[in-house]
Length: 400
Ligand SMILES: Cc1ncc(COP(=O)(O)O)c(C=O)c1O
Image (cartoon, rainbow, N blue to C red; front, top):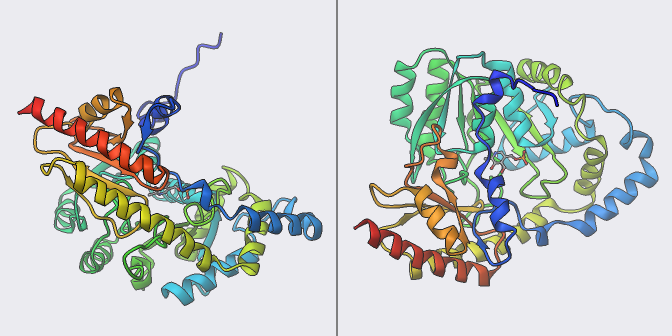
């Protein structure tokens, strides 16, 4: 047997608790509030079937061939138009790179900007996929605490004054994963000012941006960017399907050129078939109408989960009230660990994700836990929250 020696870069990576949890959630008696996927009921399968058929009948020579690394030009054009008209993000030149999901934008930007030992500043808690990317590049990750208005910008400013070799700031300002919170307009403005003042690029990771349930979407930070400091990571995963693996970076052309070279060493080009099929889909159907369907389905589930939390959870447990996205975050009282609660709840057949999973230092004493409302049915939301409420009561009483 090969006695392989793992690279140093892989030693620091944390296995995803979420993947580990699939072991438990495949048990049909466990109610899972732990997932993070969009609901399969909302995939536009019929429309994608039509688009795929059209592609294979009429554009097979292009769709089944290698494509240019930047991405399929008609899809780039559609992304450009959508972002200009809807969100005020202007990309007149070569500022767009199509990728295999938003995850690859994070990977390529980090590869281009961060050397081993450099500092990446991230919200804490944050998306584990991004944290693992920073770990794989052997970055020093500095976590900035979040509150229910997003990243604490006062603490970001403090960190920028004291930390050495900061090469990147990572934020999910809209409907954050895992907390579901949205950075206020004032904080967005201040974050951008600080990025310019300290001359540090920012990844604005925004896969949930268009899933807005309580009014029109906020303005992306990228829309105020006149200096090229913001690297926008967009994705079709949550509004069309994650299986198609399509995302995109919007950044200054010089950085996009570097990320394009970096991408050539990873996968040559993004899946050409799906780029052509999604371009057809976007030309023929209304993505906005489809997003509205997703919004009404998810809004109902969000509202119901919030109702159930209010009905069943101990009032000592704080929770966010997300304006969009897929997640609600709960905070246990001081001195209680989300990891302990997670184990306790799993034994009683309800699954959440412990806050430690998203913690920059993977700290098991993190008081938070994440709940997802896109995957469970209404009945599962009710039963899951009821059982979780009983667990919380027992768990907190034991701590008293
Ligand atoms: C905050 C955040 N960023 C990026 C991603 C990756 O998404 P994609 O499927 O576009 O790679 C996810 C997926 O869950 C996410 O939650």
